[in-house]
Length: 248
Ligand SMILES: O=C(O)c1cc(=O)[nH]c(=O)n1[C@@H]1O[C@H](COP(=O)(O)O)[C@@H](O)[C@H]1O
Image (tube, rainbow, N blue to C red; front, side):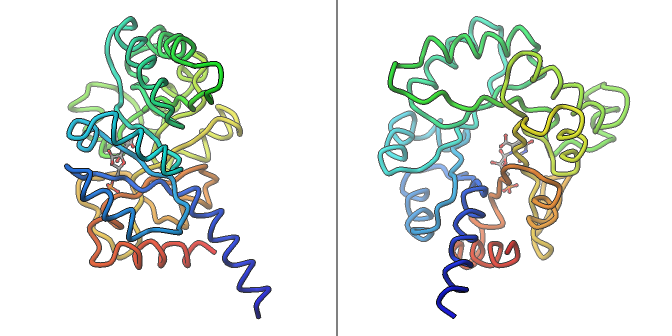
């Protein structure tokens, strides 16, 4: 009984480390309240534009001091020199992962890696750098009719993923729907970070290419990103625990 409980706990912990909780809040207080409610569950945390623009690097530093693995999701997309400078500053924050838009091109992504090299102190760990392919809110119709890219979403994702790999990035952000092809055609070790995660009962909202947590992990993705299904729940802890239970 105790042994099986122990192994479930261990599995839960290793599953939790593959869940990135999106701290999409406008204040440190709200983010900290969420983290307090999730205390003891060793999930990754994602700081995006809303929280970073409100609270800045100090909040990221605090998360690192508290021992969290941090994905800084600022989706940089600019000329190579500017992205290089941004990547240097981000690397100095000591985050574990950050992203750039693959649509910025190979030279821009290479510049991001140069920025990482400049920002790395001798003792610090190199962050994982990933390219955003096609946002999970992008549908087939939007891709073709609004963004002006012909062909399937999956092919567009694959093309940006290969460009990201050729630039030297460690992986990509994509939807779980593309993971099998990404792992097969870009490489099994190429990291996949997949938002667009919706438990069966959750509202899809502005997402377009979605999958349940369990199905997403079955595709072989490395990390799933979950925001509102946890943060907007009456009890975020219960929401995360029920997702974890579904995964084991
Ligand atoms: O880079 C991201 O994290 C990201 C890329 C993408 O294609 N789609 C996407 O939803 N995200 C982020 O993942 C999170 C998803 O949040 P929910 O839709 O609330 O689960 C948000 O913080 C988004 O900014």
